Image (cartoon, rainbow, N blue to C red):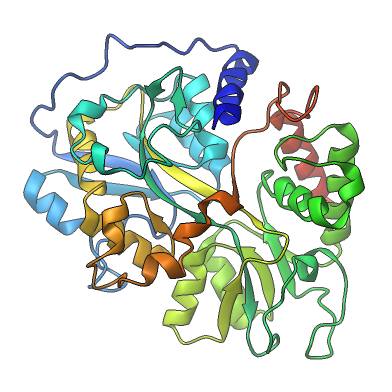
Length: 385
């Protein structure tokens, strides 16, 4: 945790932003609701029962508070940052590769945790997490967390694949056909960390200690692996629903994915399962963050409080395949069941390499390749360069 705190401070310096230790504009009380709240969220994070009536943590909130929930689904962290930069939103469910950028860019404001009922019930592993806490100031409320999994077709893989090599290296799959043109990869620069994570195990001589902290040699090796993967990939996915359709109708049989897609496809009785391979996995710990110029701050605070109730936390975890940030949600939830947290990897927290924005000043070595290069170089990889 100390390492991550250092990284958050380093990121502030890199972006040249001054992060206040205390904001005079921090809310001291929650007033009457403004009638609505506008949220940028990952697919599947804000459900109102439209897909399945059992999964609805919006309707009761709207009835109780009078705050209508408006949701804009974003497919990548970069899209979330862009939308928050444009403005017009109150909240965002930001992952660690976006949250520190939003803080450094003064796009989000500090949270008065005394106004968020349920704050004291948070998982201690997350309460002061460095991807939303800078100099002791909290810039959001934890929402959910989980791993990036290897999703696969069980008709092709009768035995679960145990390595990410099925999406990085050309090979013959158990059905006797090549994986070329039958795998996908994530359409975002943070996917470079997945390549680095794989190289940590397969090329230990590179000395990669952290997939988000890469020197020039390590970074070049990760890009080379991604260029190799480029010849195999049929699509770089960023829309969860498009990826699900690709598995159902386009012959895709393996890809890095989120538990959400696995759950949805299993719900449709598709031959789909997932695994965390032997090399481990990257992952995400998402934070609900309040825009610096939020038009509906009272409704936003009400939503953040609502989001931490054990019922909501358990329902979201059951739907998305994620883990609640409130441990009490792991018991007594009919949708999640008492085994759900264990199934979703609640005890694997320390095994996940959580997304965060790469910076030049890093802990594992003298200097690292910063995120702006990840962005431009990944675009080049997607373009075949």
